[in-house]
Image (cartoon, rainbow, N blue to C red; front, side):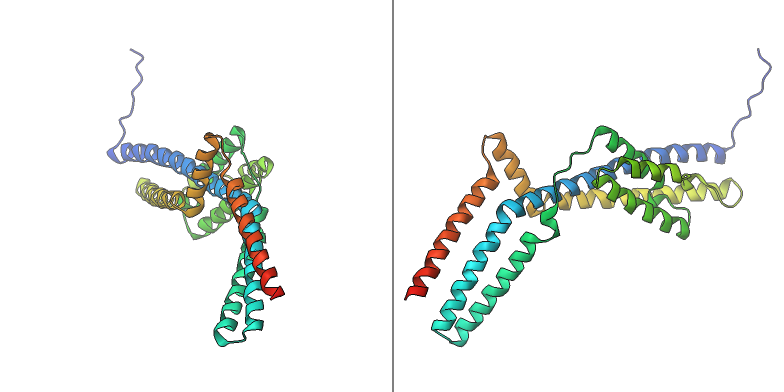
Amino acid sequence: MSGQITRRLKPEEEEILRKREELTAIRATLAELELELVDLRSQLAAFEGHYLRQVGALYAELDEWKARVSELLAKLDPSATAKEQAQQAREQARQTHREAHGRASETRDFKPSPDLKQLYREVARRIHPDLAKDSADLERRTRLMAKANRAYEAGDAEALQRILDEDHDGADAVEGEGIGAELIRIIRQISMAKARVGAIEEELATLRESEIAKLKKQAEEREQAGGDLLAELAATVRERIERTKKEYETIAKS
């Protein structure tokens, strides 16, 4: 025998060890879900941008011609109904143009590397706001997390690394004295992290049921079958534009 005596842990010390393990596990789960969420948002934003450039811009052109037709009809028959229809058509054209040529249309495809994903996981694991120990720490972590999301979406690995280098993992800092105080903090962090996990899961479900997500899925299925859904939609809208142009020309000549 070595003669060494191993001190038996007190029940509260054993509980802290268990809670620390639970916190480590929930932090890993939370980081993975945050990555999944930011990835899905980026994928949907990229697809929406592609859709707006290829199809949305054509819908804007179609609505412009529809507005011109309505305005021309209102000139020929200046009734209150015709004027109202022309105003509605013009407003629809403006709205469609804003949507088709706004900031969303500028979004480009982004395919993050495995290294970038791993770096983001580590950042989320260490600085997540739901692991804050007080209001000041929450504000700091919220700011850093937003910064990390922007860096990830921009593919800026250096910015993510700087966040890691500058952070000292405030979640592990312990204020107050005694096992009881530490246990309370860990339990609170676990509770907040679980709540965030639930919120992310709900948001993921909502995003997957959104119209743009459904359209993206349809486009992917069509691509697997050898087709191009957006090209087909664009062709259909072009045909409608040509018909509306001819309608305008016919009315203008009458």
